[in-house]
Amino acid sequence: MSAIVKAKPALEEFLKLPETEPASEFFDGEILQKPMPQGEHSILQSELCKTIDRLAQTRKIAKAFSELRCTFGGKSIVPDIAVFRWERIPFLPSGRIANNFEINPDWSIEILSPNQSQTKVLGKLLHCSRHGTELGWLLHPEEESILVFTGQKVELYRGTDRLPIINGIELELTVDNVFSWLSFG
Image (cartoon, rainbow, N blue to C red; front, side, top):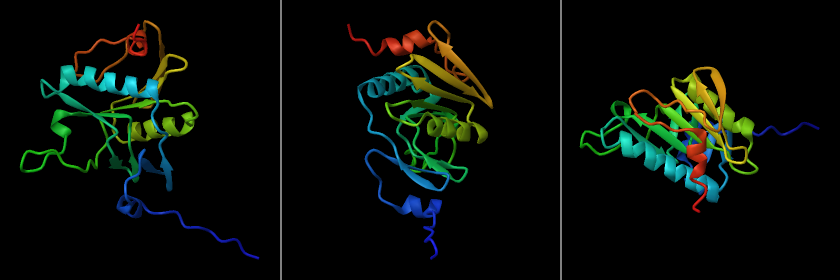
Protein backbone atom coordinates (compact mmCIF):
# COMPACT_ATOMS: atom_id res chain seq x y z
CA MET A 1 0.00 0.00 0.00
CA SER A 2 1.47 3.35 -0.95
CA ALA A 3 0.80 6.62 0.79
CA ILE A 4 -0.75 9.45 -1.14
CA VAL A 5 1.46 12.50 -0.98
CA LYS A 6 -0.36 15.77 -1.32
CA ALA A 7 1.68 18.32 -3.26
CA LYS A 8 2.33 21.59 -1.51
CA PRO A 9 0.86 24.60 -3.31
CA ALA A 10 3.18 26.99 -5.08
CA LEU A 11 3.32 30.66 -4.15
CA GLU A 12 1.72 31.62 -7.47
CA GLU A 13 -1.24 29.31 -6.77
CA PHE A 14 -1.65 30.74 -3.28
CA LEU A 15 -1.72 34.32 -4.57
CA LYS A 16 -4.64 33.41 -6.90
CA LEU A 17 -6.79 32.20 -3.99
CA PRO A 18 -9.47 34.50 -2.56
CA GLU A 19 -8.44 36.46 0.53
CA THR A 20 -9.56 35.08 3.89
CA GLU A 21 -10.62 36.86 7.07
CA PRO A 22 -8.39 36.89 9.02
CA ALA A 23 -5.65 36.78 6.39
CA SER A 24 -3.83 33.63 5.34
CA GLU A 25 -0.11 33.55 4.74
CA PHE A 26 2.11 31.37 2.56
CA PHE A 27 5.20 30.29 4.47
CA ASP A 28 7.49 27.30 3.88
CA GLY A 29 5.06 25.80 1.37
CA GLU A 30 2.13 25.91 3.79
CA ILE A 31 -0.97 28.07 3.88
CA LEU A 32 -1.57 29.27 7.44
CA GLN A 33 -4.43 31.47 8.58
CA LYS A 34 -3.58 34.16 11.12
CA PRO A 35 -5.54 34.15 14.39
CA MET A 36 -8.44 36.58 14.75
CA PRO A 37 -7.12 39.67 16.59
CA GLN A 38 -8.47 40.19 20.09
CA GLY A 39 -8.68 43.30 22.29
CA GLU A 40 -5.06 43.73 23.40
CA HIS A 41 -3.76 42.93 19.92
CA SER A 42 -6.14 45.40 18.31
CA ILE A 43 -5.27 48.27 20.68
CA LEU A 44 -1.51 47.75 20.36
CA GLN A 45 -1.74 47.53 16.58
CA SER A 46 -3.86 50.65 16.13
CA GLU A 47 -1.88 52.75 18.66
CA LEU A 48 1.46 51.79 17.13
CA CYS A 49 0.24 52.65 13.62
CA LYS A 50 -1.12 56.03 14.79
CA THR A 51 2.03 56.84 16.75
CA ILE A 52 4.39 55.95 13.89
CA ASP A 53 2.28 57.73 11.26
CA ARG A 54 1.88 60.89 13.37
CA LEU A 55 5.66 61.42 13.10
CA ALA A 56 6.59 59.66 9.87
CA GLN A 57 3.71 59.96 7.41
CA THR A 58 3.16 63.68 7.82
CA ARG A 59 6.82 64.32 6.91
CA LYS A 60 6.82 61.67 4.14
CA ILE A 61 9.50 59.67 5.95
CA ALA A 62 7.62 56.38 6.26
CA LYS A 63 4.13 54.87 6.48
CA ALA A 64 2.82 52.18 8.86
CA PHE A 65 0.46 49.69 7.21
CA SER A 66 -1.81 47.45 9.24
CA GLU A 67 -2.28 43.88 7.95
CA LEU A 68 -0.60 44.51 4.57
CA ARG A 69 0.31 41.50 2.40
CA CYS A 70 4.03 41.53 1.57
CA THR A 71 5.28 38.95 -0.94
CA PHE A 72 9.05 38.47 -1.19
CA GLY A 73 11.67 35.77 -0.91
CA GLY A 74 9.25 33.01 -1.95
CA LYS A 75 6.81 33.72 0.88
CA SER A 76 3.69 35.86 1.29
CA ILE A 77 3.20 37.22 4.79
CA VAL A 78 0.87 39.71 6.45
CA PRO A 79 2.73 41.42 9.29
CA ASP A 80 0.54 42.99 11.96
CA ILE A 81 2.30 46.24 11.05
CA ALA A 82 4.62 46.77 8.09
CA VAL A 83 6.48 50.07 8.00
CA PHE A 84 7.93 51.23 4.69
CA ARG A 85 10.23 54.15 4.09
CA TRP A 86 8.45 56.67 1.88
CA GLU A 87 10.78 56.20 -1.10
CA ARG A 88 10.16 52.42 -1.07
CA ILE A 89 6.36 52.56 -1.08
CA PRO A 90 5.15 51.34 -4.49
CA PHE A 91 3.14 54.06 -6.17
CA LEU A 92 1.41 53.86 -9.54
CA PRO A 93 2.19 56.42 -12.27
CA SER A 94 -1.07 58.15 -11.28
CA GLY A 95 0.36 58.80 -7.80
CA ARG A 96 -1.99 56.32 -6.13
CA ILE A 97 -0.58 53.61 -3.93
CA ALA A 98 -0.15 50.16 -5.49
CA ASN A 99 -2.14 47.23 -4.18
CA ASN A 100 0.68 44.70 -4.41
CA PHE A 101 3.78 45.04 -2.24
CA GLU A 102 6.35 42.61 -3.58
CA ILE A 103 9.11 43.85 -1.30
CA ASN A 104 10.10 43.42 2.32
CA PRO A 105 9.07 46.04 4.88
CA ASP A 106 11.76 48.22 6.42
CA TRP A 107 10.29 47.54 9.87
CA SER A 108 8.06 44.57 10.64
CA ILE A 109 6.01 44.42 13.85
CA GLU A 110 4.22 41.32 15.10
CA ILE A 111 1.99 41.07 18.16
CA LEU A 112 1.78 37.61 19.70
CA SER A 113 -1.82 36.50 20.12
CA PRO A 114 -3.00 33.93 22.67
CA ASN A 115 -2.46 30.38 21.36
CA GLN A 116 -0.32 31.65 18.46
CA SER A 117 2.90 29.78 17.71
CA GLN A 118 5.78 31.96 18.81
CA THR A 119 8.10 29.87 16.62
CA LYS A 120 6.08 30.62 13.46
CA VAL A 121 5.97 34.34 14.23
CA LEU A 122 9.72 34.35 14.92
CA GLY A 123 10.21 32.57 11.59
CA LYS A 124 8.38 35.39 9.81
CA LEU A 125 10.54 38.04 11.48
CA LEU A 126 13.71 36.12 10.64
CA HIS A 127 12.55 35.81 7.02
CA CYS A 128 12.07 39.58 6.92
CA SER A 129 15.50 40.14 8.45
CA ARG A 130 17.19 37.81 5.94
CA HIS A 131 15.61 39.76 3.10
CA GLY A 132 16.67 43.24 4.16
CA THR A 133 14.19 44.35 6.83
CA GLU A 134 16.14 46.69 9.11
CA LEU A 135 14.10 46.21 12.27
CA GLY A 136 11.64 43.67 13.61
CA TRP A 137 9.62 43.70 16.81
CA LEU A 138 7.73 40.85 18.44
CA LEU A 139 5.41 42.16 21.15
CA HIS A 140 4.46 39.68 23.86
CA PRO A 141 1.51 41.30 25.70
CA GLU A 142 1.24 38.62 28.38
CA GLU A 143 4.88 39.10 29.42
CA GLU A 144 4.98 42.83 28.57
CA SER A 145 8.20 42.29 26.66
CA ILE A 146 9.40 42.97 23.14
CA LEU A 147 11.96 40.93 21.19
CA VAL A 148 13.85 43.19 18.80
CA PHE A 149 15.53 41.95 15.62
CA THR A 150 18.30 43.98 14.01
CA GLY A 151 19.97 41.96 11.28
CA GLN A 152 20.51 38.49 12.75
CA LYS A 153 20.82 39.89 16.29
CA VAL A 154 17.90 39.45 18.73
CA GLU A 155 17.53 41.31 22.03
CA LEU A 156 14.87 41.27 24.75
CA TYR A 157 13.46 44.60 25.95
CA ARG A 158 11.37 45.15 29.10
CA GLY A 159 10.09 47.92 31.35
CA THR A 160 11.89 51.21 30.88
CA ASP A 161 14.14 49.93 28.09
CA ARG A 162 14.10 52.42 25.21
CA LEU A 163 13.12 50.69 21.97
CA PRO A 164 15.14 51.04 18.76
CA ILE A 165 13.32 52.73 15.86
CA ILE A 166 14.35 52.83 12.20
CA ASN A 167 16.53 55.81 11.31
CA GLY A 168 14.67 58.95 10.32
CA ILE A 169 11.69 58.48 12.63
CA GLU A 170 12.20 60.60 15.73
CA LEU A 171 10.19 58.50 18.13
CA GLU A 172 11.08 57.65 21.70
CA LEU A 173 9.22 54.69 23.13
CA THR A 174 9.89 52.38 26.03
CA VAL A 175 8.32 48.97 26.52
CA ASP A 176 6.28 50.44 29.38
CA ASN A 177 4.98 53.20 27.03
CA VAL A 178 3.78 50.60 24.52
CA PHE A 179 1.99 48.39 27.02
CA SER A 180 0.49 51.37 28.88
CA TRP A 181 -1.90 51.65 25.91
CA LEU A 182 -3.67 48.55 27.26
CA SER A 183 -5.01 50.47 30.27
CA PHE A 184 -7.70 53.09 29.78
CA GLY A 185 -8.04 53.95 33.48
